[in-house]
Image (cartoon, rainbow, N blue to C red):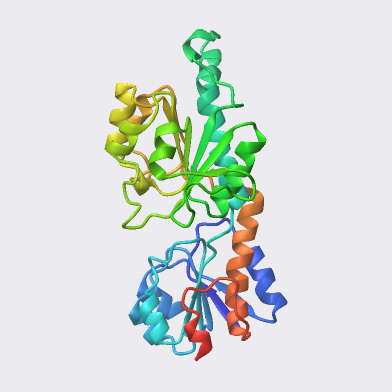
Length: 321
């Protein structure tokens, strides 16, 4: 078994190497995302582990022994999945790692905005330890926390919010408004959630249907004490509309870990607002989630090569042929 890591921006690959060697395989770590480079480095590979590597139809045709492409994380936009399927190559990802990390980050952003933690800290460091500029500050208990997207991360966020005393409501296309979840949380319509929740936390993928889901109309429907939390995908929110809503006082604040354009440009309008907290797409990261991502990415590749069905696969039909 030979597995090649085409590229990654990690400090090392000891976790992946340990997994592969435990399966009596060998691991090669390269740093070339180009099709030509990948072909040159992976001629005898049965498996590829990729982060940004371009796995094109050309690459797949040039690697006849390849059986699996395993992607760090969720997105596989650099992998030609259709071509992989034609060549009988499994494409795997790790869509559900970091549930605790991202949900922790969503809650952290919500609390920091509600309590103006960053503003209080900055003013104290600047020699102006006044509470007045931070007002109003809101308590958690009794405030309505709306979760848009009831997948693993959304449900983990809801659980943590409920534990802090928030009243939790959910909306998701798979759930029926008027129902109650087994945890006792109300399922409501999207319109009801955005118009009534004081914290609105986004936990849904970016698709044609969800692009700019939070647009001018959605922001206009929100309460003036609402805060928007986004740890999902930047494109779910219309950034220009959000800036306008913040500038006009239509909503109270926001906590954003993801943006339409990353990295955020210096001097971007979002940096002007006192009750906006920005983090650089860091919600996924903890020591634990990082180790989980690396081990599961490697294990997916190992399982396919060993003839086992991996935990996550986008084209399972290649294993059924």
